[in-house]
Amino acid sequence: MSSIAGILQAPGARFEVSDDFEFANDFCRERGWTDGLPVVPPTEARVARMLRHCDRPWDEPVAMVPPRNGAATPLRLAANAVMAGCIAEYFPLVVLAIEALCEERFNLYAVQTTSHSCAPLIMVNGPVARELGMNSGVGALGSGTRSNASIGRAVRLALVNIGGAIPGIGDMATYGNPAKFSYCAAENEAANPWQPLHVERGMPSAASAVTVMAAEAPHNVNDPESTTAEGILGMIASSVATFGANNAFHPAAEAVVLLSPEHAAAIAAAGYTKAAVKQYLYEHTRLPLAQLSKENIEHRLQLRFPGRYTNAQAGEMVPIAQSADKFVLIVMGGAGRHSAYLPSFGNTVSVTRMLRRADGEPVRSIADFGTR
Amino acid sequence: MRKTVFLVSPEAPLQSVVGAAPPRRLDPHALRLGMLDNGKANGDQLLAFVLEALKAQASVVSVIARRKSAVSLPAPPAMLAQLAAEADFVVSAIAD
Image (cartoon, rainbow over all chains, first blue to last red; front, side, top):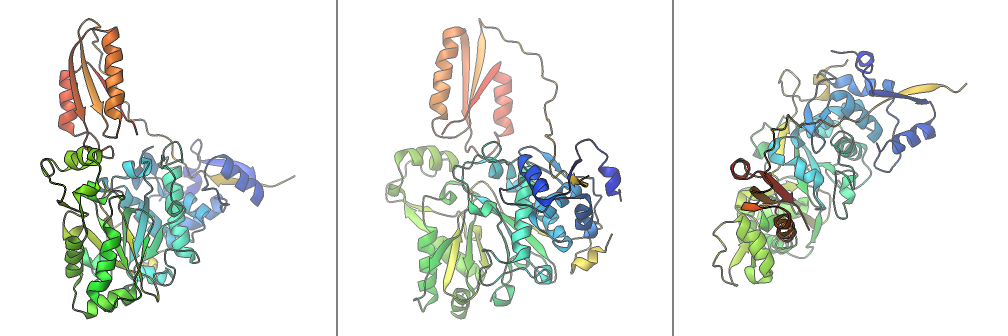
């Protein structure tokens, strides 16, 4: 393991500034390192503490982050995690999220640079989420929980400082998204009547995992009245079925649905499996081709689905997702009959990665990483 | 005297991926032109203007025009290979 003092001898690796909170914050902001909010100054001592549970070489990249293709070393990630307000126990999830985001199939280059309003959502499953006190219940995607807020913020700062997703330069989002401050939560596994997301994707329930997906902000689906599963699912389907989002126009696009515990319980009590819910949504989220302009049909549907819409009639129904398994179901939230739909960026697929030590061993607790 | 402290840079430098450029063989009297539309609306119209301007200044003997299926995906290798084989000069455009 390299010493932090040795790594920091490289040119540009550190800056000497006045040991004053306001001065250091001004320095960080003027360098373009912040998200506009004050940060915790990433002093050598704080960064060293952030690396306490990091068993990777601190100066070797875990990923290259587009569009700058900057090398995401643990040291740089730790500086971003310090600025975001993380504690050292959160840091392995920051590293894991960056690794997942940089898998080629996620298409981070496009996600970072697009004019679309998507932001990478970081979803955490498994015992580590509970160990870190992550919020999966009331207000899970809102403010108020340090782990959710600072892990998501650390990833965002790294995407800017390492990846170069600087608004107006490397990030060309037309109006952006408040989720670009932080977009991170845990699945409410205790209230999930089905398998949690990471188990559905082949991992043991004792494993911990991060799933990343490029999604818009949640669109609320308020259904306090329906007493049947079909009533609730029909209301969700009506929110998913929209041409304003990108889903209908991209073959790979996934549709993320957050089910509140009450909605999930009601649907499961009626005998619906997770697969049956996905099938229902696949069959009931279709819109007539006639709702689209000629230009959208020619330039988007016909180009991306060669042959399918060449001689299509106005009454032809256009699916929002290309198969039932393109629906991603996550149980989240507290009391209340509100679910949510998170439209996709489009040309992206969600990526799930298990939390492991550097030697490949699955991690059940942050203590499994040891202390340095 | 005020104390100082060292801040660790959270930034990574730009990774340049520019390799050695092959020699260009541009003949303004026999230009084989390539046009790559990145897939956004109006990119085709911008390229049409560029094509007309180039034709006014050089002798364009062939034009190969291709369009990506989506701006958010890289051009397929086969498309790039064809452009490289059949064009001396490729103009790529994005619009919105």
